[in-house]
Picture 1: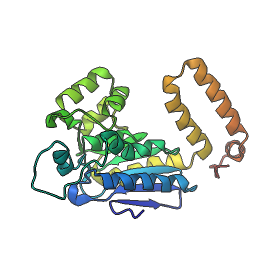
Picture 2: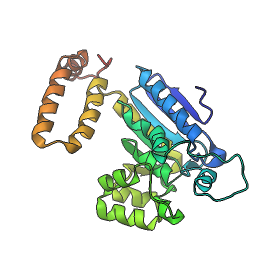
Picture 3: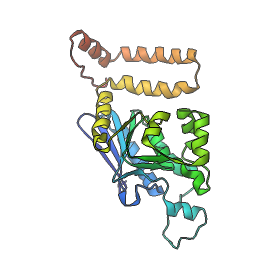
Picture 4: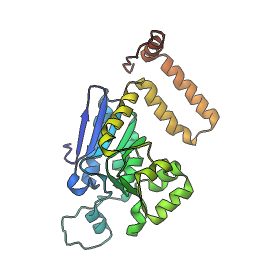
Amino acid sequence: MTLEKLQVTVDDDGIATLLLNDPDSRNAMTPDMGEQMVAAVERLRADEKVRVVLITGAGRSFSAGGNLAMLARDAGVDTGDPDAPSMKGSPKDFYSRFLSIRSLEVPTIAVINGHAIGAGLCFALGCDMRIAARDAKMGMTFTRLGIHPGMGATWSLPRLVGSAVACELLFTGRVFDAAEAERLGLVNQVVHRDQLGDAARELARAIATAGPVAVRLTKQAIYGNVDRSLEQALDLESRQQSQTFATADAKEGIRAILEKREPAFTGR
């Protein structure tokens, strides 16, 4: 599939960048972009060189959320645009295309370069980590449009900030700044816009230079252990640690410490 609204690149360090590339619409989300997202995720999954994925938006916005003309059409509002898109199926189908990023085995970092609103913020919350520009604005604005939250908002937000804060943000639909997002635990780091790229790549490099097998299994354990008891988590960690002890990367990592040098992991 041709990626008209997305751009995927991978550098020599195994750091991939997935760019939402429709700046004229502030990277608004449409079914076509969602179908391209599924294809982009499969492309990244199939590339053995990829160790971490940065996800960001072209222009001044990360994503303005669902395309407004699409929302109007699905709500039965006549905008006079006969070519307005529709969700092409149920809302769940629409959500699943974008949240396919959650299925990647490698870590993902949302680089919130500008406003992340509604479904656009939910998409960022689908990543493992988030770094935001200081002047970025965010908001779960669904109720301001009179619609129920979607794109996993009522699942992901309470898990990150707790139910009381999630209730406030979802009930009011208010917009907040990056500094508040950092205080609430929605983003890992806030930096000036001109430092955003360097900060994101610094974090990505730290991940890319760690043992890739260990990182992938650790991501699997973090999310899987949400619904497990401590005893079950210990069993999983024991199995996966034994699995990593058998890798060439474990031997390399231990030798590197003994030899006082940086390890060169191969993912084997």
